[in-house]
Length: 326
Image 1 (cartoon, rainbow, N blue to C red):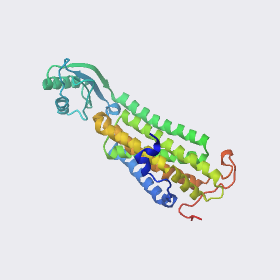
Image 2 (cartoon, rainbow, N blue to C red):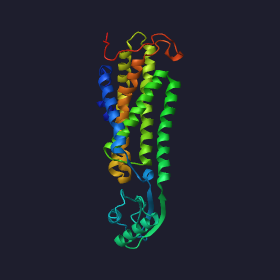
Image 3 (cartoon, rainbow, N blue to C red):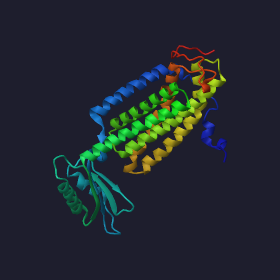
Image 4 (cartoon, rainbow, N blue to C red):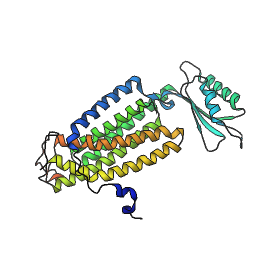
């Protein structure tokens, strides 16, 4: 079946003529305001750190073969001990699960684990415990720093890639867009009180990759149009490039969000927050490609005509919202 025969393709307009640049000031101001709010939220009330970053214990619990382990009873038994965030995740079959819980400060780790094992045994009967591991506060702190370093390294490498492929102003626009995406994604994690774990770091890294891919597509079309329309005002070239890539952007985003929505609904508790963070991050990344990355290029200005070889003609900034179409 050809792509033209796909019903959703038929619903997409063949050509659009939206004036994106006209609203760049408003959208840029809104993005800046949301970023400030997100940064404040990361400190107050702060991130809801998971066991990976706060410290805690993990163990595997299993019933004899053929018997069902009642996860709700296990979750209730451990939750009644007052050990903070308790996670119970079924694995492989209905007879086994992985349990994660926090170790309160000042309490002996071995005694807490023993209390958890007794509570589970009293609730569901005979079970076998294996793979018990405890993550201390020192190790969890190192994991948290490593996660932040991974995010910073990803953004820096993306910046270098754009810088070498295009021009410095494109690289600067891309890095501002990526920082916008990361900060707002952190803000959403705080807003919805999602647990900040290694899975969350993986989701944010995926958002960075998606956002960069979308930004490269827009920048590549912009560079082509700058060579093709050498006398057209820069803001008009930007509008044209965004409109030409809009259908591709929408279809890619809708497809990804649709898959993630199914994963969030049917993937269980373990994948729910991961899927939601990715869904929201994709929407944020699409917004930044249009209203964060390209307006930076517009304000900085670009070299026209000999753009691919670093010519120096027509390099000047443009005031947002001040130009008119011919």
